[in-house]
Amino acid sequence: MFLDFYGTLVHEDDDILPAIYEQIQQSASISCSQREIGNYWWKSFSAIFSNSYGGTFQTQRSIGIESLRNTLEHFHSADEAEELIQIQFDHWRKPRLYSDTPPFLEQTRGTTIYILSNIDSADIAEAVRYHGIEADEVLTSEDVRSYKPRPELFQEALRRTNLQPHEVIHIGDSIVSDVSGAQQLGIQAIWLNRLNKQQPDGYHPDYVCSDLNEVLSILHRGNENNNT
Image (cartoon, rainbow, N blue to C red):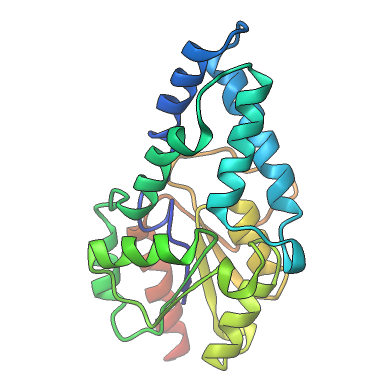
């Protein structure tokens, strides 16, 4: 079983970002809404992120700082990107744990579990240690110098487990990075739609679950079918 981490086992940084938007709005010398700030930062982040692989790979921290610096310049803010983004970095290291995560991990004990994350290695290592999460291995984009939904992270996990795509299921909250990324290699994917998002056109998860309890039901059904 391959597992995403942020948004799957622990909370994403959605609650952290508005504080950054508010600070930029207050310091900006031009009129702007927090929504405009968030959209611009995401657009800048995405442009750098999508071109970050192989020889052009940058860590998430580096991309975050560069894209936030671009955002500050765009809205004429004198804030320092490195200082402003620290609250997000702190979250990556000590994220809130979803209440259904400990029982899920307990009930899947004995299953080979690989955590696959786009967050930097040192940050997720600290988060895993902080919550005492046990997995057979934690792989990050730093290990393969490539981000999901590109195939390299999934391919490396398959190589290390010595499994074929049809022998694995991937669980994650991003329909692009997790679902599409896994399915491109023939790996079944569960879309963990905790926030009840509308399913985008053109994406077809093998399963859709609202929490990890529903994921357990699917895994149990799969095990029963394999045993009959």
